[in-house]
Length: 505
Image (cartoon, rainbow, N blue to C red; front, side, top):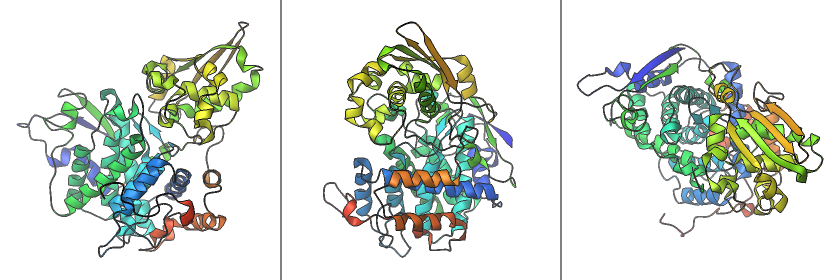
């Protein structure tokens, strides 16, 4: 591992292509190193994880609408096409639109994997576009595994070294270049083609964080799918010999110069050396609960603390001491009145630690549907408790949030519950139970259990077993057979399973 220094160069100070960050990422992508067995196994875990959260969300409005848009773009070319979650395997679509539909399904419930460092990320957002292209281009399971190892490596390197959030740029600006890099590996493209793809991908994917502020809309689910669609188009364009804005990170009018820390900025992005194995996926972690990752440990803590509370009406106030991010993004430090509103959207509620902690404390469980219903959010006793909860930034938790040593990194907090009689119940939890360093780290059987739980009543048991068999043997899938990684539903149970005329397409 070596830190690559990134700064802005005036146009008169020519920066050689080989010294640019986009080129180094492209070189990493074109480096065909062997994939370690534990990395391949974790990639399979995340393929299962993605499918579970996608099927759980399959009939929610944003997912159904994304699917209906994809259905307007069936594959009509000479290549194989790509499958869409829920649809039969023998129906295939243009890969960019399949990635759009599947990416929205994966992201809708905010329950797949995460990596947090200088910035935030959900690296498994790369799986839908890479799988779609792999299906379309008749790639093998081994090709897909290599590609996903690259996407995770590039994404986690960027998230570790460059903060987008402080400049209110949405985190898909790291995702889209990683997806382009992964597609480059998938298709065995040369370094220069991948370099141009990465630059184009970054150039078109810089959007603001208003998508995660205030009254959060369904665009939060669509945004990563949008990145995947853009990445596929960027690679296609580069494969035809076209160039891109360059240098996209270091240029005088580049992303860093005008959207991030400015002309005097300097970043350090950690990159593995050529020839080193791509193991970054092992630094990421999935979610056991359907909510923002910073809430995972606090949900587990609520389950533990509730055992010490006799009557929830006797709670005077609750103080959550936590990191800068948790306080200012999903806590009271955000200053968003919507985070305290019982009529807020699900997308807003899953970014309100005050709501989440209140419900977890009262219920002792967290459910991806039941915990967010309007009836649950509007319960008077819940609203009363919810409005007694406040967050504050505690420097030690901010320090642990940004800790580079994965053995010290933490996203939890300390909770102080003060009762009406003045007694105090106090506890803390640094790491979510499901985290690799947590009390109950997720293993293959946990991913399969999560799939079974989230898809219960939605798909036939025979389809569950078929999918598990295929997914666990991803490395053995032959070229042209990756369509079997799709999960199918009975047509009668699927909303928007036919092309319609409500929109333009």
